[in-house]
Image 1 (cartoon, each protein chain N blue to C red):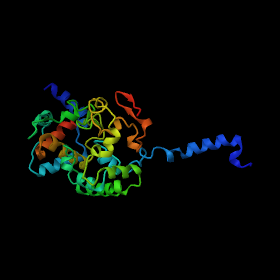
Image 2 (image 1 turned 90 degrees about the horizontal axis):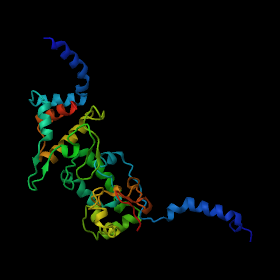
Image 3 (image 1 turned 120 degrees about the vertical axis):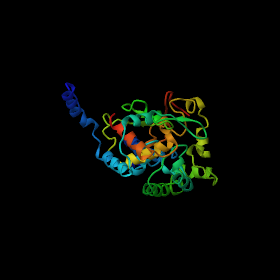
Length: 133
Length: 176
């Protein structure tokens, strides 16, 4: 295959940018221990843009409400209007570095957006998607 | 008499000195309050909203807020147990009851022992803001709510709620 060397080179060049941080690596290990085999950036992306109807009020919510559809952009808290720094690690180096921080926000934001906690599979997918950004 | 203060050429500097150094003591004692300097509170609560100075609410209100973080005015603001414990301890010690500020006394008195957990619903707060038309706050897309103190009180995070630091977002200066 003529393309093989190019693909190989591209992978080499790009791999530093999609390397999981030690914190995310540790979380992946925890999720695998719960029996999750693989994580998918595509499914993570789907979840990020999925709309959830809130029981009771019928309000529609999705991650992008606050984080915007472009993870490289600054977001805004839906209620308080406070600026949320970009989720994309390529833009915001502070992202995905701290396990406690990641767990805190995944818990809160899954509950707010989906109306329940995310499963280990969903969290793994989301993190996989976010780290490619 | 030839005392120090009677010498005309000394009067002006003495007056200026007095003004410079003692004005804050005589300023409207409602609008300057201690700023928050607890990093945990600034980080955990200040991530989403202004880290409201704890003297704005009585103990019982803080207690209620910190035990219902899973439904925090419609948002989920759950925290780890230890963090909740530390924050609660800080909030209680600095609550309205424990403040020597006149503002705290007035806010507290206005509740008439009712449990009010929204600062914006405290009778004293309402009274202080009752002249402000809706178009400047609730109907103003740049402010939206009285809860967003810092959209108008530009130095709110420093505990400065004085009138000369008020600038209503999208509108400008406000004079009472």
